[in-house]
Image 1 (cartoon, rainbow, N blue to C red):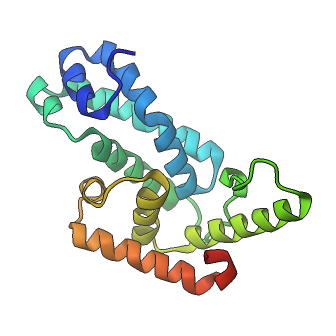
Image 2 (image 1 turned 180 degrees about the vertical axis):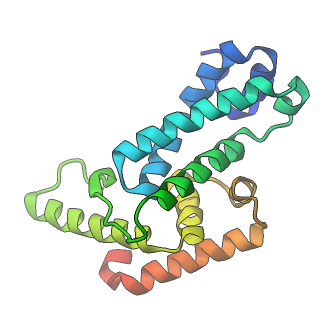
Length: 187
């Protein structure tokens, strides 16, 4: 792979989109999938939305002039596309919140015992359910911050919101999760 960092990919995309776009996919697809899975709680939806995000990004980039591509903040821009698709998918579903599958939960220990596995799976399922029940603004902010690892500025760009609002959404989400989960699970 010629272009391995997000900082160098914009120049490569501007120079030769067809050659550089696969590098962009390699850089971002895992984070996109992981974050979208946590937003939707459904593997099939996450796969569809991730794929659609990449398709829309390619189509948009192919119509942009080189100068616009070079000035693009690629990660926040891609997340804006993904979050819009998540919101659209959510709107098209029933208004009743669904319990997400805990398929994205990974135990902390590589070889836990049966009791640890049961406790961890239960805790992961409860956390996933609580995250899915958060208001949309809080859920997307906390997932982008604590699951994907974006900085507050990148999240603000992706969500097209002020940094202070993003920080408040993350803070409120974490406070809500701490209130709803027993103390032993949050420590």
